[in-house]
Image (cartoon, rainbow, N blue to C red; front, side, top):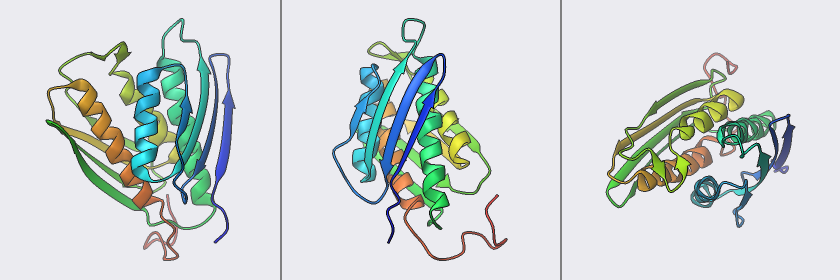
Length: 193
């Protein structure tokens, strides 16, 4: 099989982000965005998804991490879209992951129709200094740029950190399944989208 490794760069006045993704090899994640909690989430996603991921990001953090978090989602989504261009994939992915008292479910359809359904009632507004409301921006950027239907349902939890982390672990597992190479037709229509 030819390599499906991809590298994507995005530079704006607000952010400068590069992502290298290899969905077919597990490597030590390398994530440096300047937002430690977000780095931890992305590294956890890659580790539990079993794929190699390198993310370098700079952003206008003196304003707010919003632009950086959203743009990392966009660039990661572009990377997964580029993987799809290299050949058919399994299309569907699903994972339910616990972390202590928290439980999250993620379901993916690589369908060409970007949709985000995100359900989470975080009991705390922040995990450390990270505003948990920014997670929606990341998931939205990812689903939009990858052109996937992404459902993230945090079923329960009492600790926002645990709830976020099991969501990213589930996301990694679901991405791994959805983007596994598969030679079958991806749709009864004969095309995606």
